[in-house]
Length: 366
Image (cartoon, rainbow, N blue to C red; front, side, top):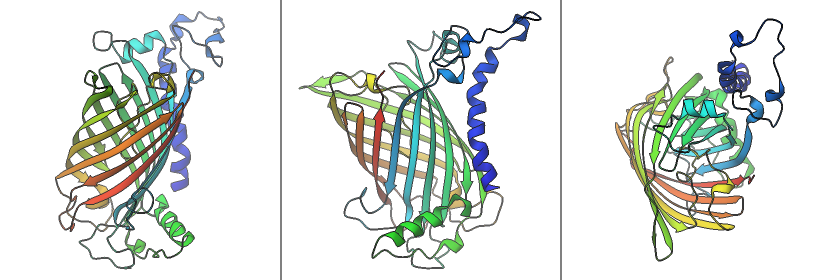
């Protein structure tokens, strides 16, 4: 089942991308015996009334690494709760036709809209507080792994951005989280061998949907330093996570990009911009701070499997987060580093948690 699920996910992505093409074809407009002109479907061509996969144009790719110890979180050496996350993401310019752009972003609501899409594969690893214990206490964080594809669509203008995301993956042994953690710990000296994976959550196919609206204030400048605020509201729904969430990000620096905030593994990346939208000159940087609150209805990594018996703990209904970080960019290459802090997300958790993040990206200029 795992192999079939992993193989079918790219096919589903291809089908989703083809929906606008099917929507544009009307057999009533083609007279019997008429040959449909295929010029608009050739690579690199566009028209006002047709769209195809050939219109997609790669904007950038991004690498993510989260860890609660080692390099991303300097000075710490822990493996507990949310202990590691990795991901690779591609961003695309959809190059929509005028008709599709008007459908997806009506002129009375959006001014000079831009569009983007993302395709990512990500893995998250969760463990109990003591990975050397083969039978962790039942009130500790359950062992779990999550491997998934993330398909996203975005629309934006100068003041706001909408993010729509569908995640398809697997939880449990087939996420390969146990294999990855043990391989890394065996590859480096003086690392504890993780012992508690026999208690991990059961295998389960995962489907989750995310929506988030982000706004942007008018940019201010104080003594040559640019400043802006980015509030956001959204929700998740699915068998992985069901929650409402809100966040506000403040950033200041030199030559701020025309995007909607820093990319993150557990959050999102702005797919609607490329290197052309990073302001003037080859160099830019900014520091940022964000604070947010989640209202949690269900969290599979804490509440256990949906359709099988597994270890579980009582999740907290309100979870707060805060992050601080810095983003630097030279030409098309960007590098980000941040530290994130989260309050207790289950009742028996002895304290909150912190982890570090590294984000490396390359954007193309056209």
